[in-house]
Image 1 (cartoon, rainbow, N blue to C red):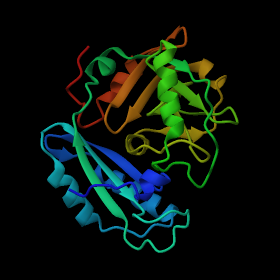
Image 2 (cartoon, rainbow, N blue to C red):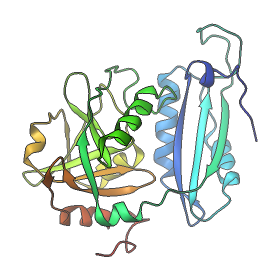
Image 3 (cartoon, helix red, strand yellow):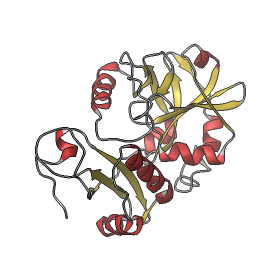
Image 4 (cartoon, rainbow, N blue to C red):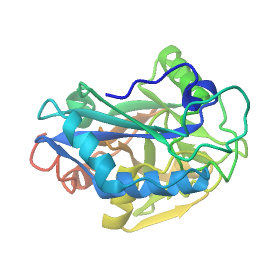
Amino acid sequence: MLQPTVSDRSFQYGDGVFTTILVDDSRLMLWDLHWQRMAQSLERLMMPALDEHAVKSLAEQAITAPAQVIKILVSRGQGGRGYSPSGFATPLVYVTASALPDYRSSRQHGIRLGVAALKLATQPLLAGIKHTSRLETVLLKAEVERSGFDDLLVCDQRGFVTELCAANVFFKIKNQWCTPELAQAGVQGVMRQWLIQQLDVKQGEFSLADLADATSIFASNALMGVVPVQQFLHRQLNLDDVRAVQQLVPFLAGKITW
């Protein structure tokens, strides 16, 4: 297994991208969407393309349990000091396996959601991709742990709702599922992308005031799937519409009872 060094650019500058993949029944879930985002992210960062078959083979070889997490991190490479990306012809691919967090309680009962004080910086060039420069997320996680809530809704610096600490967010307003478009900030999660393909979803820019009319809210990412929000600030929300969405997700269907 390839090991990083201190000269690796993902370590030195956050010059890389990564994705975390759910393994269910010893299979990589939503691989096509993970790979699509990875390839687009490499292109956006002007990094050489990778061979999909080779990377997938590395990921499959790393699987050691029927249910776990596979993380693929791609660095521009190793080299001396200096920011210039020139001269790095072959990206380095690191693959690791870890235990799958237990999301059963949150899927079943829902989470309590607050609002983060931290606002995400807007940068269209980096918006959507899962790059390794994740200091905002680190600070958000610390804020969540101090907040008394299970997670926090995060806005960008313009005041528009963007995502949760490490998940995308969907909300139902006037019987219409909505989600932030993420053109300026945030990560375009693969579960988000999959759900947009399955549901009638309106993408746009939404303020916190817009969420006053939301009757249902849920969080999503590739590992948790779909997790309902049972309380937003001090307001109780309807979970029934989220239950229907949960049953659409292949690795959740039939596994959640209420």
